[in-house]
Length: 128
Image (cartoon, rainbow, N blue to C red; front, side, top):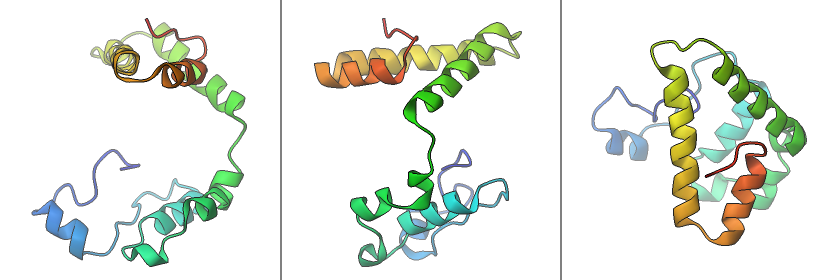
């Protein structure tokens, strides 16, 4: 999924492969070893071999994440760059439409606390 498709997307039947085959591996070498290790620990077939939520939160990939403010700033910078560059076959419009649709969905289908959390996550991008 990190590469934009569900595991075994080009094979049939997908449900059987997900149940029976070995967990997928990332094909691209662009991913950090920390991310690959985290993903592998999450995709263990046997649930008893998977880490608990507490253990996963202690994984180096999670522990080494930058502070939330930095991540938000990077997202904001990326979205502003999308807004300011010339549209390529409507991709800019599609990206902004998706963001608005996500905001609309959360505004309609979530509790007030979740709406506040979403707004905090999207600092500078009002959901209205």
